[in-house]
Amino acid sequence: MRPHYNKFGDKIVLITGASHGIGKQTALEFASAGAKVVILVARTESKLVELESIIRGGTEAGKVIVASYRCDVSNKREVADLAQNVIDKFGYIDILVNNAGIGIYGKVEEQTAEELELVMRTNYLGTAYCTKAFLGSMLHRRSGHIVNVASVAGSIGVAGMAGYSASKYAILGFSESLYHELHGTGVEITVVSPIGVKTDFFNHISFGPNKPNYAGFFLQPQTVSKAILQASCSSRLEIIVPFYIRAGVWIKQTFPYLLNPLIGWLFRRQLNKSKRAVSDTS
Ligand SMILES: NC(=O)c1ccc[n+]([C@@H]2O[C@H](COP(=O)([O-])OP(=O)(O)OC[C@H]3O[C@@H](n4cnc5c(N)ncnc54)[C@H](OP(=O)(O)O)[C@@H]3O)[C@@H](O)[C@H]2O)c1
Image (cartoon, rainbow, N blue to C red; front, side):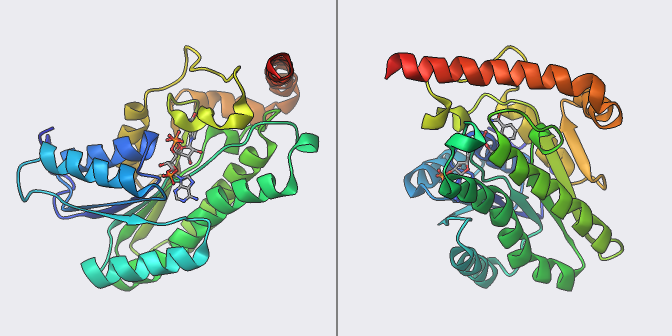
């Protein structure tokens, strides 16, 4: 892994959810792009330490400084401690990637209130806590970029993912409002909204044995991490990955009565199939 360009040469980047999937790939990509400091955040310390050594081993000695912090982003006290420790050590960050997230699958009537809360606390509040924790320092320096990883499920609600979809709609609404507030401050915000990605995301027990299992159109994490690096230099509010899915979002929002029946049918079918699979194995 050799730095292939130096666009991020003086940048300090912090990535939440860096222990797996998209976040891990994004950390590798920033390191490879020559970022000055890459800060890894997640709950699984062992995975972060492993990634630290991969990054150190893969880049020319002394090129990239890597640090990792264990933090549960759904806990605002832990996020405040994280920000304090990072600012004490590095002074500031240039790029914050709010990527940590989880999904719990199932009908609303069958999910517990605690499950709905956990998804919202992790995905939406985790993003809001981390944004608030670093925003003051970015505004003070009149420089910085926040990249929030949402999902196409933040524009299109699907059966079986109500809590998840709500958390991603919330991220999009939060980011759009903040985008307007930040106008002229030197601080920018961009949302990256991918379709399905081949990661451990679907290993959560609620997806059961009949998980989407990486349908043909699913993306590689590298495709999304590249979009995240692009987002961190972009003045756009939202980057949908792949770009042509924006047409689907536009059609759904403009002619909901055309697309919604199809989306409803497709995802209800998947939900019923996976329910049957769970009861067959139990
Ligand atoms: N995979 C998809 O199809 C897809 C599609 C669209 C959007 N996304 C979004 O992309 C982001 C990354 O997901 P992924 O696909 O890479 O899933 P993943 O492989 O399951 O990775 C999720 C990451 O989030 C971390 N995380 C979860 N809860 C956390 C918490 N409370 N505090 C700190 N870190 C936490 C996990 O680390 P620890 O468990 O070590 O904490 C892990 O590093 C999520 O926001 C997801 O919603 C995914």
